[in-house]
Amino acid sequence: MIPVIENEVSQHGWMTIQQFTDVIAIAGMSPGPIATNSAILVGYSTAGITGAIISALGILLPSLLLVIGVATFFVKLHHYPIVKSIFYGLRPIVTSLIIYAAITFSLSNNLISLKVSWHSVSLILIFGISLFVLLRLRWHPVYVIVLSGLVGIALY
Image (cartoon, rainbow, N blue to C red):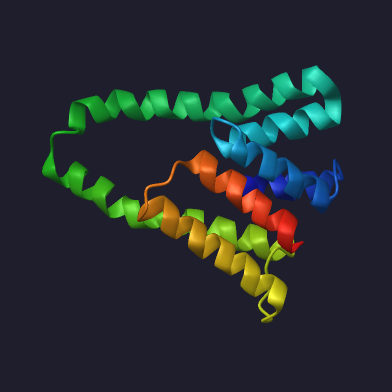
């Protein structure tokens, strides 16, 4: 959803790419889904409380209705092995879509570039170390966010 929101924001000129990048950073640190938080922040930035409410409804209602519809059928079919296999097969696709969105967002906002520079290498190192301490050392995400922010202050 983030690339879709970014496309709409840039197409309508609601905010600059830097402002949208800041919105994504804030939305990522806030509790809840990042796309929902981003849409609400963009709506608020564009049209105040009314924009935030309309953005929240616009991003939540279609998903809610779709989930209710799928859940109605899934309850009746979830015990079939073919359905379990389908959902098991969808896992890597969902993961790749998330990775694709992250890479596309990073490239379009000049957070990383395909050129090797000190800046891009340091960002990849922060990412790699953060991922390592989250997965292997089982650090709490709040500690990782705070420490990454402090490293960002020190480096940039």
